[in-house]
Image 1 (cartoon, each protein chain N blue to C red):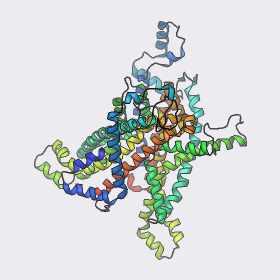
Image 2 (cartoon, chains in turn red, purple; image 1 turned 135 degrees about the vertical axis):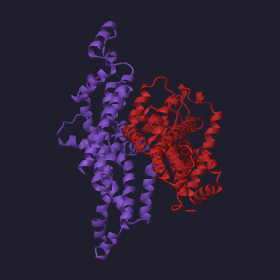
Image 3 (tube, chains in turn yellow, green; image 1 turned 30 degrees about the vertical axis):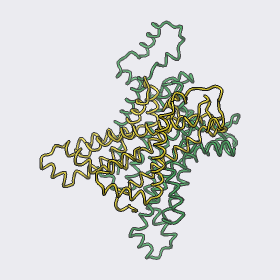
Image 4 (cartoon, rainbow over the protein chains, first blue to last red; image 1 turned 90 degrees about the vertical axis):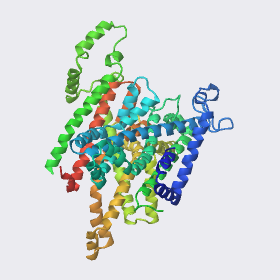
Length: 297
Length: 320
């Protein structure tokens, strides 16, 4: 889904789009990954319209821990719930939250980085100290503590908590780019003409760094899916009633399940791995497309 | 050099203060207090209020904060209501295990990274380099906990080569040879699992450092003087490429902190990560607060360590 957005955004300037397209076609791995991502996205979002999430997560005591068979393609978990259905819903939930968190961290990071880099001086100094502080926090633990103590926990609060501690990477990158960019002639010219700082930052500098933002956000998406599944694995992400891929993996914390019931956790692991690898493949191809020296096509 | 180090340490002070304020605020937001878990429910609520008053829990927050910090400085981390013992003692037991796990992981990380990085950099663009690069590429995309689960499944359960939980077999006397051996066998699988994933960034970094150094003029000079290929690599290139790797040590420590929560939970290894996981599930918040604080300080120290090593290695960083 992310990728479709990117392509649409770039379409405005045909040369940029054709460069990216050429790069992806040249890199067979990226092409296969892109096709895989599009197919799986269409499939999980399409099928989950028909599938009823509540029906899938309803406990069925007569079919606990069924191995894969005709009735349940991939068997059932300890509550007799169909793994295959949970896999589809889980992939959808994992993708959705990954995209949501990536977009939110992207917006915060870009605004923070742009302001900090563009103004420089004392503002930059103070903002960077704040960023440094967020960077040294033990991310995983702080997020888990927040998840545990937040009253009225929901998917929204979960993504807000994740966002609050994940915006720093992209902010730092954008800042260093903005620092370079503001020295360029077009910014100076615009200032001489009397454009407001706000206008220069968001209508002139921002378009010039879009490619960097797109590449970073694609790579972040892969990382965020991994983080979400990690948190769900520990039991501090999605609740069982809205399973994600990590929820399925969390059943493997039980040694019995890990040892004897591979069908519960192996498919989800493979899917997470494939998703992360293919998003990265596409991201790397995009990265090369934005840097003329690295292009293959 | 000293100027930089001192300035860097001064930056650390507000960081530690901010961290402690944040953790204190979190601790205050946690529902309930140590009394609600410890005291018999039949006790009169008014009496409880009195105890709370006496313990200073109804004071304004800045007084409470000062008390809390005062306790911390003296090594008093509070009481664990779950384990019914002082948190300091509890942490003291667990931190030793995590320490050994971290040492073993760092050992394996460099044991894997250095030969792979050197081979990959020296013979770049051969099939050997390509296979090492593919490993780092996949390693980057693999979440640590999935890899650890697979390792535990294959080597712990299916092949049965390693124990699947704990840090030592029960019934052994501390100090005996068997005890030490049992400790080591319990360490190997978690440490290798973590090292195989965390090492990939070091491998990649070392590879690009070596490829960079290879093209420098002083290498040409060394070759022109007639130094053998082995000497060029071992003496000239390696020495220059390994230094920046040393600076990674601090970052590795920061990385280990998140990793231990997953690794110790999966391998049932009784260290700080597992203590954190158990305590947050049991809502034993005084332990949670202590562990988060200690890990936070460890990662601040890790960042400090990298900056200092980096400034030793690369004088250009010392400006400002």
